[in-house]
Amino acid sequence: MNLNQLKKEVEEYINQSHDLTVEYRKTEADLLDKVDKQLRGKKEVRNELDEKKAKMNDLLMTKANDLQDKIERVKANELAKIEETTEQVTADTLAELNLLEQLDLTGQDIDQYINKFKRTPLAMRKLQEISKDKGLMNQFPPTRQEYLNVILGRMNTSIDRFRIPNTSSHEVKLEMLKDGAIRSLNEDVEAYESL
Image 1 (cartoon, rainbow, N blue to C red):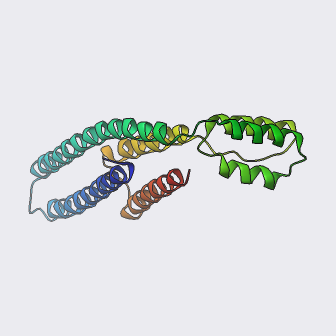
Image 2: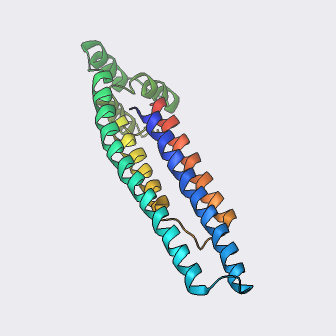
């Protein structure tokens, strides 16, 4: 399993949690309406709603635990890929960095080298030193390992947020939370893949 497949499963989980919550709220409104019209008893309806909520929570909890196990497997796979694709500092790279130390560089020059050395962590560290020594304010991207940890942490947070449905919120708010979580996952994975 790769990061994109995991992202899709987390999205499906978020959608499932949202759908179950909306369905529960509709059932609750319908049953409470029947209680108001004295078509059903309060205790009977409360028991039915509690049972439905417990089943929903169990289903989401089981799936959440499964997803968190998958997150750990994906993390191990991605870290192995990062290790395989990390470039080592060569004599040519070192000579180029030493030359850069001696030149009068602009922020744009550093940005070009950031892009060139983004898969060479030691070269990036040296480039940060050069930028700092020259008083340039360049924005250095996080390492792939750092960003992977951020993404997987956010996935865990999304899973936790949707693990126990918020049956007291309005449907519009639930929809906004769902859409925001999915959008955030998509943006995170896209940004990670560009590193």
